[in-house]
Amino acid sequence: MNLYASHLLAKHFLLLTWLVVVTACSTGPNPGPAVPSNANTNILVTKTALPEMESPEPTLLVSPPLIATSNSISQPTKTAIATRTTLPTPLPTIPQVWVTPTTSKVHSLRLEKQVATKIVLDDEFIYWTPAPNSNRILRYPLAGGKIETIATSHFSNFNDGYLGSYDVLRSGDWLVFTDTRENDNSVWQIRALNLRTGLDKIILEDNDPASAPGPDYGVDGEWIVFARTSESKSENCVQTILSLQNLQTDEQHEIDGQCIEANYKWSNPKLVGRTLIVEQDLPEEKGGGNNIFRIDLETNNRTVLTNNGTSSMPQFNSKWLIWKGGRRYSLGHRIVIINLTNNEKRVLEAPVAEPSDPFLIEDSIYWYPNGFSLFFVYDLQKGQMLKNSLPDAKQAYDAVAVSPKWIAWSRDPDTDSVTAHDHFLEWRAFP
Image (cartoon, rainbow, N blue to C red; front, side, top):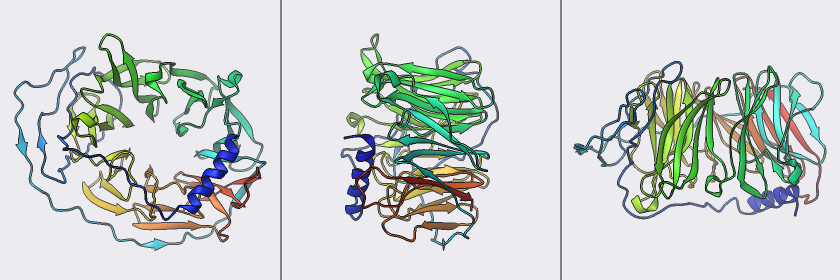
């Protein structure tokens, strides 16, 4: 079965089962997050202040934040003082205010027997990975012009080169993406394409089965942060490695490296200036669960923002910090929101029964449509939920992307069809 047919069959399955809510959970006591113990320092640009977070349930915090000195590995304090927190007042839930966006001109691009599976926007172009033949990244001028191929998989000679496994990220002059094989995701490269100069760099690569399916990463300007796994022969374990690299100069800093089985795993790092927000996943032997950490890359001061074991998939910019109020692979029905300008904390209920993980762009939270005929964008400034819908129930959104100026989507005009057919890549001014 080819990728296009798989995509269509998966979509039909979703449409037939949309009333089924799948939940994921794990049992056992949760001892709270592990505090990491080693790092290097002396890193990058501006600093973003974040509030200290209260635990939403009584929990023991077993270690103070660690501060590393230059060219040294910090060690945990041997005589940590355990303190019990009190149960705080529940965070206020944001009331739902539903708004249908004002209709603006919709620009439409027909994709011949293809669908756009990954979409990203900037002020001038729309970029996407097509399916089938997901070994390319294409772009098109928002003002009109011609489709251009700007990147091709380095694994195309295997006939399964794949550029659609992770979201394509756009930051500064760079377009960052994962290049892997569809049939072997233990082989991967993280590539950075400079859209101003045309420089195409391999930032990181591996062919270690323990590293599959490749790292999580976040980008801010010239810097990229990785959370990846790798086999450690010296420690005889699979390690979690948190590291930082400059896209232009290749300057590197390892922030932390630990054996996962005895400690934790880092994932979903997000970077703004010298502040890193990252998810810490505990192994089942330690009760499982996910928590959110803040790491100051200038001082290596590490702060536990949540310790309830049910906080995951953080998103972060200079004004907002959000995360899913649930475990990593559970449905994200509750989104915790912190306004970094005034330290206000609130909870937003997801607008659908089976929400994707939330995405944050500037002042907007949005969710993937997952093959349905509507999708939602929440305006954090106005406190409004924007509902975007298609007039025909036989049509569906395949993917969506939001930028400060534009909103874009891939539209399937005929969800009843199981054969290859044309889809439409569309966009309009946002909101």
